[in-house]
Amino acid sequence: AQSKVLITCDGAWLRGKTINLKDIADEAIRRSPVVQNVIVFKRTGQDVHMEAGRDFWWHELMSLPVASTKFDTVPMDAEDPLFILYTSGTTGKPKGVLHTCGGYQVYIATTLKYAFDVKDEDRWWCAADPGWITGHSYIVYAPLILGLTSFIYEGAPNYPYPDRWWKMAEKYGITILYTAPTAIRGLMRFGDAWVKRHNLDSIRLLGTVGEPINPEAWRWYHRVVGREQCPIIDTWWQTETGGFMITPTPVVPLKPGSATLPFTGIDADVVRENGESCDANEDGYLVIKRPWPGMARTVWGDPDRYVSQYWKEFEAQGWYFTGDSARRDKDGYFWIIGRMDDVIKVSGYRLGTAEVESALVSHPDVAEAACIGVPDELKGNVIHAFCILNAGKVGDDALVDELKKHVRTEVGPIAVPAVIEFVDSLPKTRSGKIMRRLLKAKVMGKPLGDTSTLAD
Image (tube, rainbow, N blue to C red; front, side, top):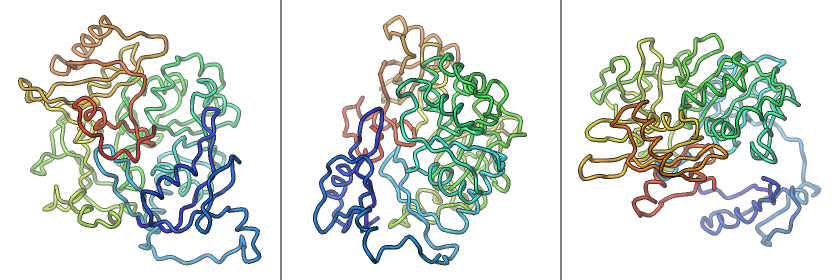
């Protein structure tokens, strides 16, 4: 992005430890020497390196006679740049997506207001990282535009104990909780008791974001956290779309694992390679057929990539190609399968990783799963599965056999993984998306490639 000024703080707290953010910033600057000045906010108070002439403390700058907290509002054109946000990079090098002032802010405020039916008395908790699009849109911009009371938490969901979130939701009277399926699955591992220790009657709506939620996690979220009373607003959208694209509202009948129907004004479809609409329950390409206010305007510094990535696939029709595969059922409900890159072809059959992963997670011993396709001379590809087990469960050969039988029953013989590997964690972006390309590179002994958005 050719940034010249970097604003950071000395550190942050996570799981009882101080994370030295200034050291991370210094390392980034060494790799990108275009930064001329760094402004550092003192927060955790540990000693950090401050380079003379380049680095400045915020409090020292604000103590200068010329400093002021008052400034005139600058009118901006609707198409002036608002921010550049780099996408997660689950499948390759991150892209600098550019959003503009007018359409983006109108769209995110509208989607939040109507998808979650927000009211003046609500206490909204979007449990996301402010550094990704959900945090930008639904922690920062939309709640401020709507004047919504927001709850913001810094820390892990299960530290010091697995009821950290539920304790805060009870204490502060949260009415709407919006989080990622990966967080839900992670908290499922600890069972129902941690949730049931707290009175969550204040919560009236639940939401999910970031990836398709498997039905098992949806049901747990609805039954245990929502007391079987709270609608789950399962939203599908992207960094590039700015805000919700396919989402229920509180009055739309729900189906576990489906994002339901397009938001008002969004013309979405599932099509074949030739652009024809797919039949009911047929997998295809998820496309958006008409413009919407919150759409990204370009990829910063690489307009050709913007065209090739999103508009080339269905250039003749003028449709936006999401890069996701999906299907629609007989009721018109959308079921997001995952990235097209996450579709595995086994013996000529196309399988979405989400299908196999959902089958694995539906087993009572499995908390989370990720699947990749590995080349095979006979079948073209075979499935290699990685599983995180629930607390107290042990992975052994007997469980491997049991899980294979379970997948065979749930999906079919073609979906049975050739290999099931038990792991303690999975590589994820800070937005909670599993970086399957890193798993594949590790299995095949290839370079990991770009890891700039890897959370850990």
